[in-house]
Each structure stands twice: as C-alpha cells, then as structure tokens.
Image (cartoon, rainbow over all chains, first blue to last red; front, top):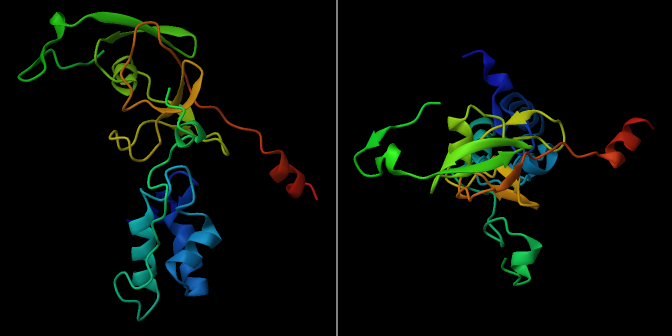
Length: 91
Length: 110
C-alpha cells in the first residue's frame, strides 16, 4: 500500500498516518508527546478511536519501547458528556 | 431506497409504521424504531455533518456510538449521535456545520 501517508488515523482532528509517522521519526518521543505535537487523540471522541494506533506507531518507530510502556492515559469523564449532563440537567 | 424487507428477528418491513422527519429542512420518511443514521442512509443521505474546522464531509463511522463522527443537531440540541438516536415523528434534524475559527485566521494573517 502506497497511500498509507494519507490514511486518516485521528478522524476528529484530521491527523494522517503520514504526519504521525514523520513526527514520531523526527522526535523519537513518547505517545503522549506525539499526541501533544499532532493533536491526534485530542478531538471530540477523546481518543477512543485512535489511541491504540498512536501507541502502536510509537512502539514500531522508537526503538526499545516495550508494548504499552508509557501508553496514553485514561481520565474522567470516560465518555463525552454535555455540561448539562454533568450538571445533572438530564433532558 | 434499499432495506431488508423480511428479517428473521425484526420481522416484516410492511408491518412497521412510517413517520416523517426533516433533515436540513427536507422531509424524509423513516420507519418507527429505526435510528436517524439508518433512516438517512436508506434515504440516500451519507453526509451527516462537516468537520467543524476544515469543512470536509463526515458520515457515520463506527455506528455503535463510540467515535462521535455522526453527531447532528436534533430539535435544537447539538452533538446528538445519529447512530444511537431513534427517529421520532416530526423530529427536526440538522447537519453539523463548519465553525468559524477567528483566532486561527488572525494568527495566519500575522
């Protein structure tokens, strides 16, 4: 496959595989740093679609990164909610 | 319009009630108990919203309520997932639109 470059990894923030790959190659960083540099995983869905792929990209590019060594973290709210729902306004 | 006419679990399509709803001002027909995403797909509508920043088209992606790609406006309420929300009679659905990004435009022009 030659069009991997344009493959959309993070749909919410429109980050392609090419961009993630290039950034990871250049900075040899953790998945958290890759996330902050590209915004992959920082969109509306909270990284629930692309988190695993971002982690795997780092594992495959940066040498000596064990599987899930410094994975992206999970934090509340675990699913996107409105301010109304958080404020107990359930309509 | 392509639908399953006879389903071993869901039954026959003819037995179900047809209800009208609007999407972006246009009236479409849905079957009772189906989701907004399913009704629109059956009516040939695949673009449910555009990306807020870039304006590129989006349809539903995971269809199980987890990727948030199919969010639409329902009766004035924003960011409702079309794949999980059941169509109600005369429901007013609108596509998600592109948002202005004044700050970004300002930075670009510096």
